[in-house]
Each structure stands twice: as C-alpha cells, then as structure tokens.
Amino acid sequence: MSRQLLSLMAHIRRDTDKQSGNTWQGDNLTGDKDNHTIRIMFHNVNGLPLTGIDGMDMFANEQANLQVDIQGFSEHCLDTTKYHVHQTARDLLRRYYTGQASLQIDSSEETAINTYKPGGTGILLLGDLVGQQEPQGRGGDAMGRWSYIHLRRKAQPPITIISAYQVCPRPTNIIGNTAYHQQIRALNKAGRHQIHPRHAFITDLINFVAKLQTNGHDIILGGDFNESIEDKNSGLLKLITTTNLTDPFQHRFPHHPTFGTHAMGHRRIDSVLFSPSLLPSLKSIGYAPFQYTKSSDHRPLLFDLDRRILENSKAE
Image 1 (tube, helix red, strand yellow):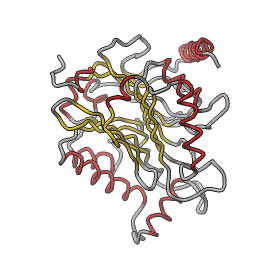
Image 2: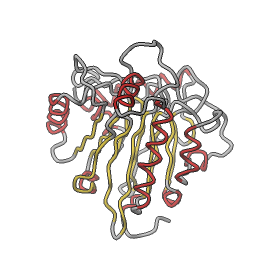
Image 3: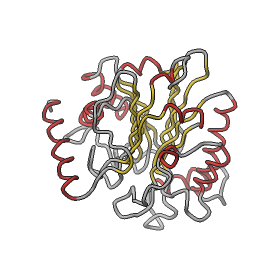
Image 4: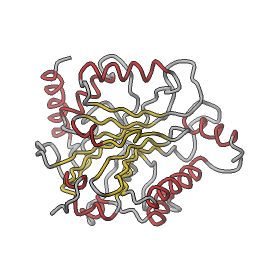
C-alpha cells in the first residue's frame, strides 16, 4: 500500500474525529516536527496482525506518517515464542526501512497453538534514532509485561524507554488464556502462589526501574496501566512515589478536565512517566482521538522532546 494512500486514510480518520467531537486532549501534535525533536508515542493497539491491511508494514507506515520516532505499544497479541513471528516482522520492516528500523516485541513464555496470544508489549524505532540504540540495548520481561530499549547519550548513562502493560484487576472468565491467566500460571511456576498479577507487576517493575536508576539511567515509562493515579490503592501511584518518576501530562496541564483514555471509561488509564530531569526537554504532549492511528479502543499518547536529551548539552 502506497504512503500516499496511507496518508489519505489517516486524514479521513482525523476529519471524522473532528466531526464526532472526539478531539485531542492536551497539546495537538498534528503539525510537522523539526530535526531537533524526538516524537514518541505509546498506544494499546488492541491486536497487531503480522500481515494484511492492519499488518506490520501498515503499522510502521502509519508511524512514519505521524513522524513518530519511537512507538511503545501493548496488547499486540502475538506469540513471540515462535521464530516465524520475529522473522516475518523483521523481514517486512527490512523491506521498507533497510537499516532504519529496530523492533523489540515480547510476550509470555507460554506457547500458543496459533500465532495469536493475548497480551504482550513492544517498541518500534524508525529512522536515524536506530543508531542511538546501545549495542544489545533492548529486551523484555519474561511474562511479556514490558519491553525496553536503551538509548545512548554523550558522556552520560543511557535513557531507558519502557513500554508496559498491566492486566485488568480480574479476567472476564475464570478459566482462559488471557494475559492475566498467563501471568497467574507463570507466577505459580515461580513459586509465587499467593501474589496477584497486578501486585507482582508493580513490585517487579519498581525493582526493574530502581536497578536502572542505580546505574544512572533516566527513565521514560509509558503504557496501558489499567488504572489511574487517583484510584484507591493505586499501584501506579506507588510506582511513582517509590521511583520518584513524574507525570509530564499532569505537570504540563495540572488543571485539565477529566477525560477517558479508554472508549468505555472516564479515567486516564494510559499514561507516561518521566525522570524529573527530562521534564525541561518536554515540548508538547497530548492524547490523540480514538482511532487516530489504528483501530483500537484506547487513545494514543504522543509527546515531543528536545533531541538534545541525547547530547551533552542542556535543552533550553
């Protein structure tokens, strides 16, 4: 599919969003970015086929059209234990972005019957930022709860970008193969029989982030947390206070009216957290309308950063 057709389809979706009142929240990032800007997006994509009209090539093309350098995504629902999943995805990216694409995708260590397996996380880099990735500077959680990359900086430890997904408090069915069920089985196998998957997620993610911080890394952590900071007994709030991360959207828009990031909700359950030292580099941040990039019941979150965060110079 041509880039011109993909761009036209994106414009049609955006015009429809305006007419229906489904608008940007925060900053509107539809404008072109300059060469001194890094654009990052986090999105629960609600399934990502390898091929077809919604496949990996379309996914990457849409990211390129939006001028997004780094996309963290969740619920791709691919079984990454299968070799052909990685091979097919990377072959498609090499075909269109030779040397200019880097993909990290993760799911639980369980093997599904077919390619489809609920849950999972990933990160896709496009363009020259691929060259900023640390050698062997990517990986993921064994349960598919997060993926990460390390971006190299001059005379400083790396910036680590983490794409995360926390399961809902309870599954729709008692028995099944949801990400929730996969994590229950993995935790039981590890001898952690009495721990809830969400409690394990927050505990393990805090430990992962804290270890990176001990080594001097700055952190950008985004994804679908299936809870907000304001929720009672919020694990997300515990993560923020324990790791000293901050919410850049709340920092930029402290009095923003309440809105939902899920089509059936009214809370901001998709979010991003920064190391405080990165806040001065934030240029803009906003939640796009639903269906802005692909068919999903979650809003994408986009933000622009001053590219000098990767250099040994201070952003103004």
